[in-house]
Amino acid sequence: MKNIYFKVVNILKGVRNKIAFYPTALAIFGISFAFFMLYLERTGISQYFFEKLPVLMVDNGDTALAILGSLITSLISMMVFSFSMVMLLLSQASNNYSPRLLPGLISNKVHQIVLGIFLATILYLIFVLFSIEPAEEKYTIPGFSVLVGILFTVACIYSFIYFIHNISQNIQINNILEQRYREARKRLKQWIKEEEEINEEFPADEEWYEYYATNSGYFQHISYSNLMVICTENKTRLSILPVRGFFVLEDLPLFRSEKELDEKTLSSILSNLHFSRGSL
Image (cartoon, rainbow, N blue to C red; front, side):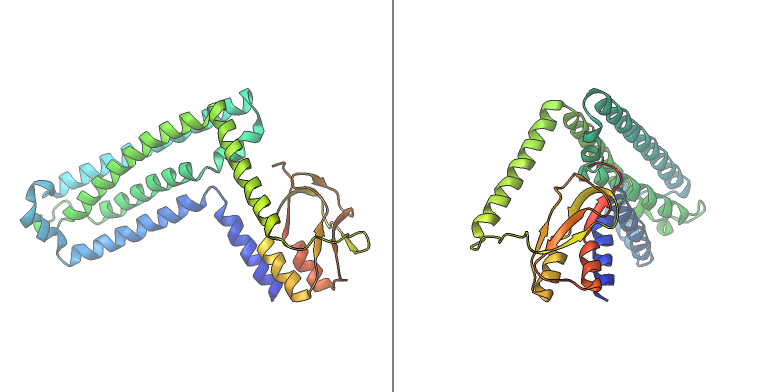
C-alpha cells in the first residue's frame, strides 16, 4: 500500500513539472468559468448590465457572433506566432550556446502560464460563442459574457507583450548566467544552513549493507520527503552513492543502508530514486 502511495506522489510531482500542467489547468479553468458565466446569464445578469451600462453591452446576436469569432481567430494566430518564435529562439540558443539550456527555458513557468491564459480565453470564447443564437432578443443575448471575453482578450494582449519581453531577456547569455548564479547561490546557502542545523556527524558507511541499481540511466533526483518517512519507519539511515547527473549502470552500487532491508522496503526506496535516459 505504501509503494502505491509513493508512486502516486511521484507521479503527481512529475505531472506538475510537465510543460502541459499549467496550460491544462488553466484551460480547465476557462471551460469551467464559461459554464459559470452561462449560469449567471440565466439569472439575468446581462439584463441588469443592459439597464445600467448599455454602452458596454452587445445588443445584437450577429454582432456578438462576429466579435467572438474575430477574437478567437486573433488569439489563435497570436498564440501560434508566439510559440513559433519560442521554437526559433530555442533553436538559436541550442546552436549558439548549449542544448543543456533548453530544459530550463522550456520549463519556465511564466511561458507555461502565458500559454495557459491563451488557451483558457480561447476555450471560454468558444463556449460562449456556442450559446448565442443570431435571432435572440436583446435581453437574452449573453452580453455580459461577451464583455468578459473582451476583457480576457485584453489580458491576453498584455500577457503577449510580457511574454515577448521575458523571452527576449531569457535568451541573452548574461541573463542566463545571472539566473544560474542566483539559483546556485540560493541552493548552496540552503545546503549550508541545513548542514549547520545538523548536530551529529554522519557515520562512516563502509560496513553498511550495499544495494545496487536495477536499471541504467542518468541519476536525476531523489524524493527526500518519501525517503525520510521510509528511514524513520525502518529506523535506518541511507547513504546515496552516485552524484546527481551522473550516469549509473545497472548492478553497480547505488546506496548503502545502516540496517538490512527487506524486499518491500528496498522496492519503496528504489521507487524514490529517479533515473532518466536523457542527460539533465
